[in-house]
Structures are given as C-alpha cells and as structure tokens.
Image (cartoon, rainbow over all chains, first blue to last red; front, side, top):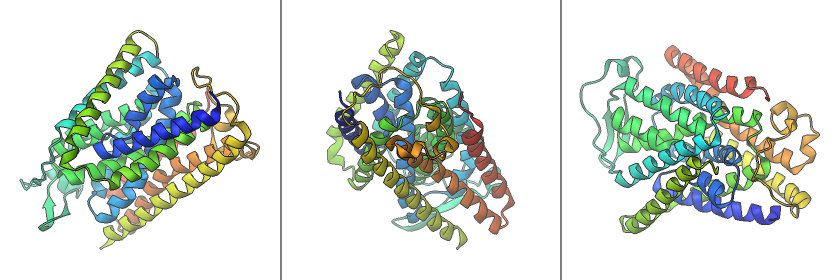
Length: 279
Length: 123
C-alpha cells in the first residue's frame, strides 16, 4: 500500500473512532489502537504512540470548552493529576519492558471494562450533600456547579480511594496509550461522589496532562512515528470535535448497543491475538 | 472571582496550543506526502524512529525540519507541551493567590511532566 493511500485510510478510520469515542464517552484512543493493530496490521507500539498523541489533542480541545462553562473542578483535577502523572510515567516504563502480547491482553480487558461501563452508565446527578470530609476541607476541594436550578454545591468524599484509582488510571494510560476516561470518571463519580457532569468534564481536563506525562517517554523511545501519528491525530481530533456537537439522544440506543457489540468483538480479538502471540 | 479568570485563560491557552500544533502537523503532512506519497507504507514491524525525531534537541537541529516528518514531529512536541504549559499557568495563578498548598501540588505535577520529557534519554 502506498503512503498516500495508507494515510487516507488511517485518517478516515481515526475520524470515525474520534466521532464514536466522543459520542459514547469511550474516547478515541481506546478505539483507534485495536483498529490500527488488528485491521491495518500496524505494530502495537506504533499504534499506542500515535493514539497517545491524539488523546492529548482531543482532551485539550474538549477541555477548552468545558472549562469555560464552569463544570470542571480545577482543584480536584490538579490534585489528582499528581496520581495520574506519576502513574503514567510508571506505565510508560512498563510498556518498554512488557512484551506486546502482554500489552494486547491487558488492552482487551480494559476495552471490555470500558464498554461495559459506558453501556451501564446512568448519570445520577444527585450531588452529595453529606457532611464535609476533613481532607476535602484542608485541600479546599468542595465546590459548586451550574444546574437547571442554579448553582449547586457538593462535597468531595473518600479522597484516598479516588487517589489510588487515579494512579491505576494513569498507569493504564501510560501502558496502553489511551486516556483512561472510564476509570477516571469511576474514581470521581462512584469513588469521590462528585456529580456526574463534574466528574466527566474534570476527567476530560486531566486526560491531556496524564497522556503528556508518558508521551515524552514514548517519543524518546522512538514509538511516535510522524507518518502514522499525523493522520491519527488529525482524524481523531476532527472526529471528536464533531462528536461533541452531536448529542447522544435516547433514540440512538440501538447505535450504542451495536457499537458496544463491535467493541466487545475487538476486545476479544485483542486478547486472542495476545494469547496466541500474533500481536 | 479569581478562579473564573484562571479558567478562561486556561481555556484560551489550550485552544492556541492545539490549534498551532494541528497547523504544524498539517503543514508537515503536505510536505511529507509530496515527498513520500508514492513510497510503500510499512508499519508492520517495529524499528523505532531515527534519533533526530526522538527529542526536541534533535528536531531543533534544523536538519530534521527540512523533511515533512520533522515538521509533523515538531507539531506533536508542541502538543505535548500544551498540557505542561497549562500546569505551569495554574502554578503561577496559585502563586498569585498565595495558595501554598496548590502551589506545591502544581509544582509536583509540573516536575513529573518535565522529568518525563527531558530525562528519558533515547535508549
């Protein structure tokens, strides 16, 4: 295949991945890596390097809009970035030592979990109005966010649990070249009891920093190929910018299910290829 | 409110960073495809990038920037720097507010990012 042809195909595939990733909340990276590796036969290391770069672009692009609307909690974000960035550095070092077959298996498992959590997702927008946490008070993490009934205050709970889950999210991000959005939302939404809207936008905001923490290591190891990263980054970025504008209506439930099934097949294929040593 | 102003500045910074990076990558893409469009694409086996494309110093040696790949790579490095600049900006803002806990928190995150970018030397 010629480079021009290859670039067009990768660009189109990445655009679709970015679009679906933004619409379902899975993120573009988690979709584009298996597509590149399984369908286009790209070495997993190149696929992960290119995906990581696209993750920084989409996170920064989307965060720019959400930050302006006042949903994301900057203090919670920067505080948890300690955990995600240290985790990401650790994950990137792991990536250079773990064989690609092992990475493929872990990737498949994370993919299965992500699709499960996105299908189950029931945004409970009931803010925790329980008693303030001592840690949250010291760190001034409690804040408020805009709702239909005006500004609603919320209290942040169980910070050590959230911190630990974030370290894991960072490690997976650095190891697999994905944003780990599903796990970040879980840490804040279920773990720290933040309102769903605040969790998802703050997660988006943190993804860029997490990915940047491992991207430098990938770059210096020669995993980031300009010829491949170019169409992946531009495609995923354009797709996710469009996807953020297309609202996920309840009528698209069928689309969600079909897409979920595709993800499950890709995840199983990643695990199978990992086990048989084909990747 | 101070936090609100910070959020607006952060928002602009992120847009400029991503926009400038995408522009460089697209410019590089034009040069790259004009130079190598008809060559055969091969990503099946991992070889690793040449040293010039692995670090900022390698790219700024200018020789790399004569090629489309070098321009693309410079755009990607700019992209990696965008979240770092955001953390640096957050640090400055907390410094202005004399919020020492968050000055320390931002400094720690920034140190991690800088460490990962500059100390991971090409293997």
